[in-house]
Image 1: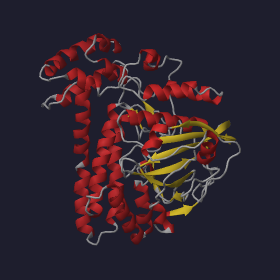
Image 2: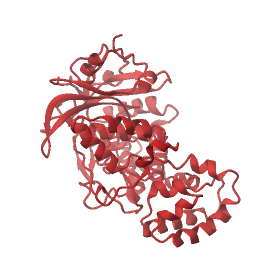
Image 3: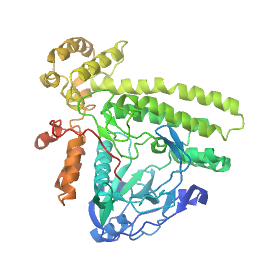
Image 4: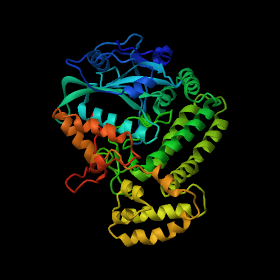
Length: 472
């Protein structure tokens, strides 16, 4: 059987100013680590033999119909505008329309330098490739919109980071790789014809019911509001919410220094490059609003009546915090077993979170254990849970099936940072069993799996991961 990908490459049909045509740079000795057969089936991808797929997903050979390009964009990075970024270590092979009717990009990440590499080597080392594979697939299983992983390949080459590291390439799948920064680059350059063409393309591809630039803005605000609330509900911290990492499609994209919280605290930061806490857990809703304000600023540039556009865009962006809270409340109500809405729900949830922060309660295990004796054991002072639980029990009595609601809203398993780091360390030594085990267990995060109880355990003091790194 031959690897076959039914490409239909709409972005490559846009003008050359949107991208640079760039083939992947071949590697020395590709070896297939993982291939996502379930995702391949959705994409209508026919797998080939192991050697053929290793060559293709490393970039040594191009499947028929591929038109590799590196996409152009700019973006605000930690609040400072960089007028040109772009795919510096990735190439978009092309797009497919899946069995579900959804168009998706297939991209190689770590495939070598491009015109946008900015003196980088365009490569990725094994650790970040495996991290993104595990975490993106875990996010999908959690029901959160995300890019996905189709394949991971060793390159047989060394990548120099803080030391020599084994190289790897990730095949990433997304509904598109359009970012806030994709709009910013054309707005910033005053290339209004390109900005209009990009806007029309994004509407046709993602939000066909949207009317014009402001309709697109409204749709992206709604999608991002749902996404951020979903992140918060599982204790996820993106770590680098720059505008070039903010997807127009409302998917989680670019898993760099990302992490899931162990002990809950709203100011938690893992990213080694976020020294001021800009992208801390609790700041993520505000940053999402800030990012979408930058999208609004870009979209306005193409409007004939600027004053009217500013007024409408302001109204849309100013409505986003309430939309975020509405989505957040829906998620967190479900986490404590509530489907109906009552006046005091926000205070009830906030009180629990405050007590969790003061008592170093594990975020995932506390919510998973609600309704049982184990929940109070997550608190350094169990009485803090008991006094909250008294009020919660009264509220819960007015619900129909709270146990089922909680079971479907509170995962038993997340990609815990220490387990991801242990998996990477094992893989560097040639042992991929922890990687494959994580993929298998995390594919069923809401099911109790007795043989995987160790993956529920928070880190010991010696296992705590204090900082995460981009690393690619």
